[in-house]
Length: 423
Ligand code: FES
Ligand SMILES: [Fe+2]
Image (tube, rainbow, N blue to C red; front, side, top):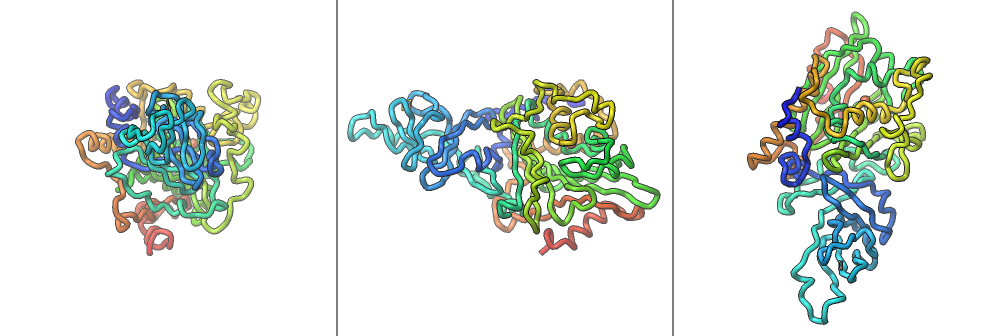
């Protein structure tokens, strides 16, 4: 269990809260590139870390992320005109560029200098992997975008989607830490290959994996070992990466070297989060059947099966052939498990066991990072120089290994050997 104060520390993301300040040390996903498909297209509302913002793509294709309310008298810029390299408020015509600079105040008399004295809050944006990333911290402390290999891949090697989660970001993130739930929540009885990867037979072989969380410079590396038979262990290595990402091996024992999956749990506010699903393949384009969520998420990024409609659970299927009665989409299973805890789960009421070891390790790591920020220090994994921007050791592995091999040793050797992680 987690005392109430610590639970609050890890779930309150306002700019004046320690976690909010920690999140504002990093580039985080703000929206998908597809939401702003072309220059001068309609702006979109973005709620991020409890702030109401408006994103727009100007005539040059550059993205701006502005506070929603016009600096003049507060009208929503969502309704603004996106024209000639700026977003113009429809109330009195003030016009802003992507940096929040006031370009025009046409209701003021000629020669007015008011526009030079006012600035709209604006956050810098970068586009990579079909995502518009933004940094909501102080301008002078802006870090580098980490060198994750998937941020540089061509669009056809990536499948990126997002969906709103009706709960705190931390519930989503903790779902990434917990390998033991694979043997239950994602189990199906038909042999049908679950969409979202994985190998049900391996998960089923041992429902009480041995877990270990290892603190790294980027977050926590998590090992889970399932005994398949007397001589074989199924090893999964996944990672929690600051500030809100899970890097998860995909596809049973064939997880490497093709690629892996990233689930980012970005706080919308204290009680909602956006789950980004990033799936990539190194040497090839994504297959149609790997576009897992196309028919599960509506155009408003709400899941079609959601908390309101009880995830369209089919009790007959649950009895017959499917553990959850919710089909084979991991996203639906995970959402049901985490959203039904409530908007912010009161972790002082939980009863943790050995199977929660990695959850505990991750909480500890985040609590330390949050305390560090509250004490005026920088949290881990804020990257400031190209020399320090080597993140190849954030490795995802899913493989069978001989039971005689030490899994930690195995990971170290793989990291040395694999061309993706070593020069
Ligand atoms: S409120 Fe936006 S221009 Fe007046
Ligand atoms: Fe899951």
